[in-house]
Length: 459
Image (cartoon, rainbow, N blue to C red; front, top):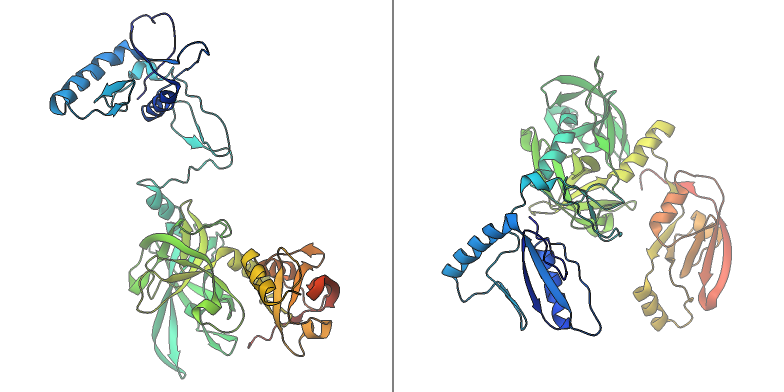
């Protein structure tokens, strides 16, 4: 649907011209109308005369536009669609006409190529922004397509449930095949019982695929703190596997899809948005080591545990793990970036190794820094960093010389601004000396050497 406009001193053949002269201030209004009608305008301004704007309507469109205008005026003669102090278009809808299909192939649309403005491909209608070919828009089939990409890899899990050594039925859960060899990512509490931090497998796990095939699965690894586990099944033919995405690119408001088997209802799909990308375990009243979750408003119930959380590209971005009891729209998932690191450690060490420093830490921002300086003028002049409010006595950090109120600005030679960066740098490095630069009161810089220990698994 297009109108073509141009400024010219000669009438174009087979076209009827409509032109009005008006002041410069009306030019913006005309350009806005052109945009609304998907029109192409060419403008020029003579400093010795007023700006002149002409709207040229091809002969193939003029008749349909004229008929619509007459019909619309007969119904609502006193309600102009657009008007100004210099010109009036009456009731003509600028987006109601159609281009002759025979001429559509010759139309070229040109738009400025910038990072903010997407480029529209010729005749295809596809939108590309130079960085990502996906327009990130939600269409009528977006959720369905995302679910369809992952659906074949979603499995239902059933494991024996025991109480005081007595078999009391079977627990249910969900998972996703992440490798064609039969590797399944799921929640630990679905497939193992924990006594302290020690995982005791519940026995063989029954695995049912979406196509109805059943397998007997074996629990390879499970981690108590992250509640992540790996189950393995064997098949003579390759199995459908879902693609892992990245959770670091998620933003509040992004659409996501939760898949699984709530209350034995197989092949269930629910959709919602990401409510928070870094919900801390302490916010949920969970003790122990620091953990972060994705919060969503997807409908999650018993049996969804271990099922995949999927973005609109059909990639797994989280593992559904829990919800707030008796609350709607408060569901939580382990970010897939964290789960992927746990899988790597399973392969490397056979378990998850977590280094421990013995520090309570707090990310700083401009507002917190300003408040701390109001309370204590000697607080270091920093723009960012990680505050150390508490040092655990006898910990590696205490032995290294850390003091309360220290601000960590460099860790292992790298500038840091968040706790997440420190965790990334440490990885599974236990017993390895690390250089840390801290800034103290009155801007005193101190370099410390800390040797992380492996965290007590029962912490």
